Image (cartoon, rainbow, N blue to C red; front, side, top):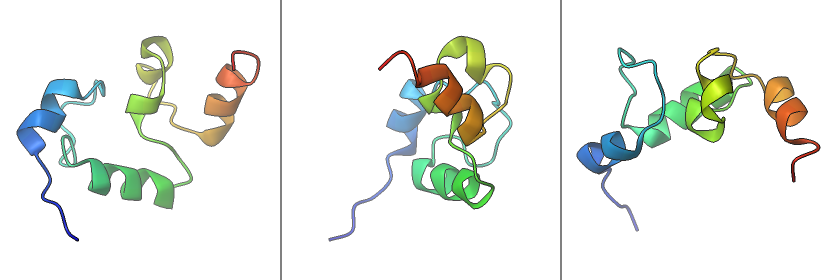
Amino acid sequence: MKTECNIEENLKNCKCTYTSCSKRGKCCECIRSHWRSGELPGCLFPPELERTYDRSLKTFIEYYKDRV
């Protein structure tokens, strides 16, 4: 079953501050692109880390390791 991407709805909830990204609102493309680079999308980070544009797994793990 294939579902359609609702870009307008995704944009309402997108927390990424990199507004000129061509993948903005296209979550599947965003995740695929970041994962190819060994990264996670900005929406998974808290605002203070998202603004640094450091999408590394290391940063994600370091931030959350004592918070979960």
